[in-house]
Length: 306
Image 1: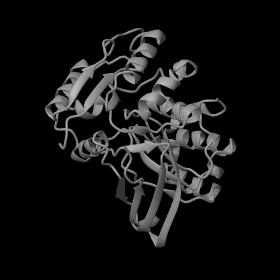
Image 2: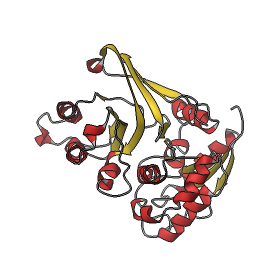
Image 3: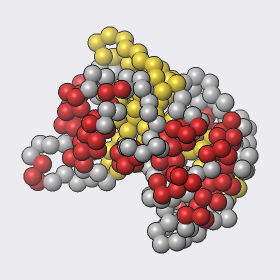
Image 4: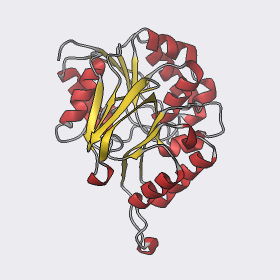
């Protein structure tokens, strides 16, 4: 820890089901030396949501007005797409300009892409309090280190090892805006004003509980909407917690990746340490990045971002 940061914890999507995990996560953030403020409606419940729409919008507004260094969600789930027409975009953009880093994943993808489309502000794909800091065991070292770098403004990039089949025979580098997140949410936003129209971008995707055929179907939506053809690269994070079926007959995620490569000219890479997994990096959605590949080593670099 180089310095204590102010962290605001709030619930913009599904109701917190595992309250103990969120409380553990808050405790761990405090143990790291951070000053943590917990939104008054963090544990609110309305049907499956963390409060009705007005309650969750008010929580987002409080997060934007908190002056915190980091505003982090308790969990994803579902609920943000309902709120997109009413998000306090000016307050969020002002907060980002003032130094607040909005962090989350999964359903938070809707918030991130809408904010990017409407304001151009950069937000961060990263951990959630419950599933990442609130685990029974110790939180993942890499996740925690990346979050600490993000919190103090020192994160400059990330790297990972590609599968042997994707090794580049010569050094490759592309530049573009990093964007994306949860594939189900991205596909659901196609054709709306809330999905940014990005040309020459680097699109990263992940998902959970989605069989490879569903992943392919959602990618087909992005393909037929003309979105994939405009990107300079597509990077797969982790696709987890799905069950193969006996009638797949060899159809698997690798099949989907191979199919996608046959459909787009841009390079397609896999293995990005991000998704519904313990080891996840923090990624700046809406920031210009360099994607460099040498042999099996891949790097996403964005330099020093305050």
